[in-house]
View (tube, rainbow, N blue to C red):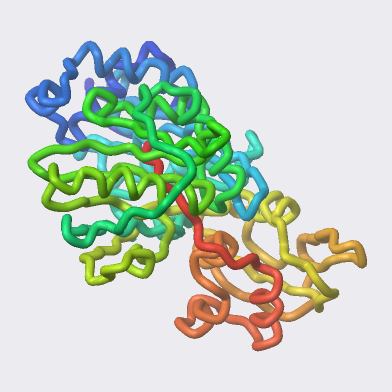
Amino acid sequence: MRQKLHERLHMRALTTDDTAQYNALLRYAFQVTDSELASLGWNQKEMERSKKPVLKKTESFGWFDGEKLASQISVYPMQVNIFGQMYKMGGVTGVATYPEYAGRGLMSALIKEALNCMRENHQCVSMLIPYMIPYYRKKGWEIVTDKMKYTIKDTQLPKRHKVSGMVERVAIDSEDLRRVHDAFTRMRHGALKRNDLEWEEYWRWEADDVLVAVYYDNNEEPTGYLVYYIANDIFRIKELVYINQEARHGLWNYISAHFSMVEKVVGTNYTNEPMAFLLEDSEIQEEIEPNVMARIVDFEAFIRKYPFDIISIHDDLHFVIDDPVMECNCGDFSLRWDKEGNTILERGGTQGELVRCDIQTLTAMFYGYKRPTYLKRVERLRASDDAVRILEDIIPIEQPYFSDYF
């Protein structure tokens, strides 16, 4: 007699032996066909080989119906800059369930397992590229960055600025490219630190199509780069990174030098600031859409490491937090600072100005994506006026930057 489904289902960690099933579920869920793979120069075996290292380097979990994989999730071990402090981050990817197993709570259980694993691995923040924002909000993630697509006509390209350096095209595995991004990551809030795994993901689908140009200053030091390709008279910018304004001008000089070859430049800006203000002709087209979601996995560990902007002594804060998945984040917390500005967080404390909200709102606020005053105005944050003033003072002001996809 056939067993009932709940008796057949079991959860376990995935290994490289599960690569074929892992890949098959991803292709089914995201509707990737053989013809689409072929158009990218891939075949089935190449895709499977590309995913084997993923399963080696991630914490991956799945529900199995007997021997058949029914639902899965993976977590990349990553690092992200939050206001100058490098945090271990769990990058969630590979989230998929076959439709016949939907509505049975399998993914909810996998998410909880993944979050508990992150907490054990001291990854007190998590990020993901959402396919369904409302679903992930219910699980504690919140939008923390936007991407802004811009279109610049050839006649609107910036005029040439005099710079002391020059641009050179380099290979995609250039060490100078990595040096620039490492320097950029150290100085830019929200940026992902790219090790070998992150660079593999960055290039996974388009390494054969793109070109890379690096700006070298007068001392032959790389200080900016451009990842781009040209097709159908359009100059398409995948990423434009610079660590000073000279490099920005140098790279735009290079882009503008293609004036006679293209009709327009199309790119994506991840700074959460419009491009138009930087151009002489600002009447360009810009579109904005949500990009990345994040969540605080372990509130206590996150706050104790957080680089508060403490200039003077502040009153205590009393947080009352709700988290739909992680019970460890729920309840009362008292936050204060000693005379040296060191953070002191006590679980269960009720002293200080009241701040009441969910983990999603806290994440958006402490990432700097939305300010406390705004969050109170839209009724996402319930706090006294004094509490909001304290939060405005101690949370650094800078929009997060995140340009990666995984």
